[in-house]
Image (cartoon, rainbow, N blue to C red; front, side, top):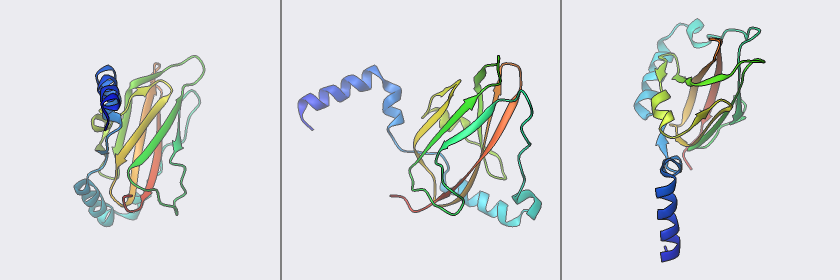
Length: 163
């Protein structure tokens, strides 16, 4: 790397330390978590494996998965980019601190790990470079508004081999 580029990189890293963290890969789901989840899913009764989320009610916020926009039969490559948008009901505001991400049947809370690598705002969250083991994964995304109304959205990922 030439001196000018190195100097620019150092200046950007000092000025925007969080941006540097965002550019790095991080384990959103570890291999051991994926293995534990696969075991739990294999031994769970069928009704637990297909649990549906509650239907939205009037006044609830909405969560929309923008990326990945894959179908259940298509795979995404790791590291994964996840982009989610939030929309509050009229007159309400999303409370970013209420955002949570739970993994699978075991509901492993990935929120703190994720928040170290992404910024959650009233309009949504973007997660870049999330390492996820190959296989099927189910994330439950949750958020609430300033009136205490909550929303929950499922994100199912089929991840292929790392690129």
